[in-house]
Image (cartoon, rainbow, N blue to C red; front, side):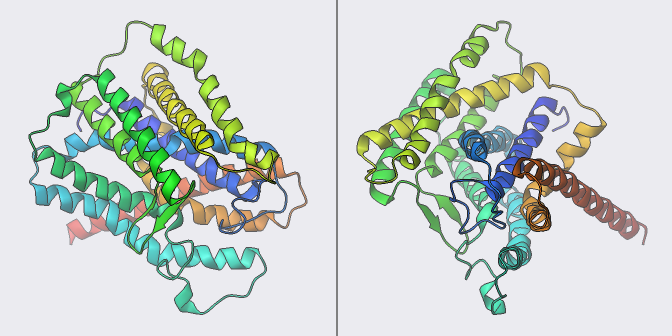
Length: 370
């Protein structure tokens, strides 16, 4: 892309920053949902971290899939199918392969060490034998699969850009809700499918793919190329988004208020997914429009953060593990630990990625001279 969309780059970088914040929250999450699998489990906890985590859980991954979908048309442009697949494989699956054979073993080392547990036989440290499977790296194979599916769709005569955006969003909302409600009732409310190559959350997989397709259609229609001349819809969505979010948060915490005798009824699932889907659409709209309106800019810091964002996503959990383990030894309030761990993780991750990029560039330059 010669004329970069600064707001889109910035949105991607800030979304990954929120992913880091979400994963840092797992260290201090009070409900104990992360304790059995997360890289570090600090006994110091913060109640509100779980509430903030719900907000991130709703929007961060759909936004990342939307951005990937928005850019996929350009990725496919003027390329053969093989060139497209090869490019995506190098971009997504090669880093994934390197990460699962290096970072996943490190993850388990830190997991055991931070809990004072003995290390285990070496062959249990790889993601194929690890009960946590790929953990945060699941995003890369799923995104690769979505790109392959998009390539297949592009070879058909289906022209999604001929459908209005309003009807597209309505159709996606209905299909996504029906899918999640149906799958949740059969496969379990919060179930994952874990395999050696691809992991995905059963109830959300189609929602993520629909967001990917939505991004592609929005690009093809050129909807985000021109800034809106009216603030009416933007102001309205900003004003009402808190309603579905509040409903969803309450739905998520009700089982903890009444842990004994609480049953997951069809009505409960209905409210869960309706509130989730409405919150998702509202928050995505607000985030996208806010960045287009107020953060369509560049600068030295933005350039560095944007270039590093992909690498930060790949390595940040290990950095969380390192500093989260060190902070276990400090008798300071959990809120202070939370802030310190977030700042250290994000800053050090960017430093590591910057150094790596500089080394790669130096090697390329020296290789070109030889």
